[in-house]
Amino acid sequence: NTDRHGGNLLLLGSIWPKTLGPIDHGCCLPPWWALGEARFEAWMDWPQLSDRPSDAARTLAAEARRQLVRSCELLRELRLDVASIATLQICTCLVAVGVADLGLPLAKLAQLMVRKDYSKFSWLEERVLASATQEGAKVTVGRNKYNDKLFVLEDCGTADESVFVDKLVARLENVFREQLVGACAVEADDDDDEGAVLHRTRATWVTLPHPAMSTALSSVASSAEDDKSPIQRSHAA
Image (cartoon, rainbow, N blue to C red; front, side):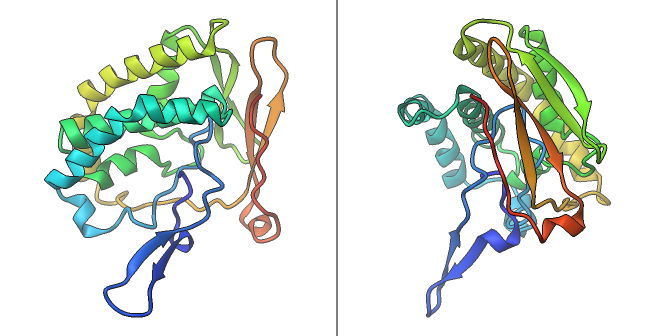
């Protein structure tokens, strides 16, 4: 879920110890080319997540990777878009390599996924864009009227989108293994930016026709409009 702000995490139970309950799953699994509104401030500043992950956390991340093939099969049965399933593959790979293999703090990985400035891509978005281009996708960089950077996907470079996604995820896994440790170290030294999170509550994806696949652009309303309009989504065909 890429929309984990504080209002989407509830304290449950009438007696202590209480439990936490996530709500509002409407922004689960956006397409891989629309990761710019990821937000995790509901939990990103928890002190324990800035420490090295526990053995249990590393085991859980490894298990998520082990079950990924089956998870994707179930999502295909539900007719979820290939581009959205790709997001699950990419993010599971990020967590599996970062937590299970490299033992990096979850908070540092989350900081690589969120934008500190909507006019700039996140660390993850930059790597996804570069890897997609290297795998033959026709992706350009656009901006909406608020100057937010956007992926503009014209074509994934092959008639079989699933083949492209498999190559994209494989390439990104190599990138994660090579770059995550250094990227998290840079984030850890950047005290001024730690915990900096942007707040956006409304986005619209406009589907554009294309012979191979549909593409969407995000447009983001101003903060004054946020309180007036619900989140709207129209996903790629």
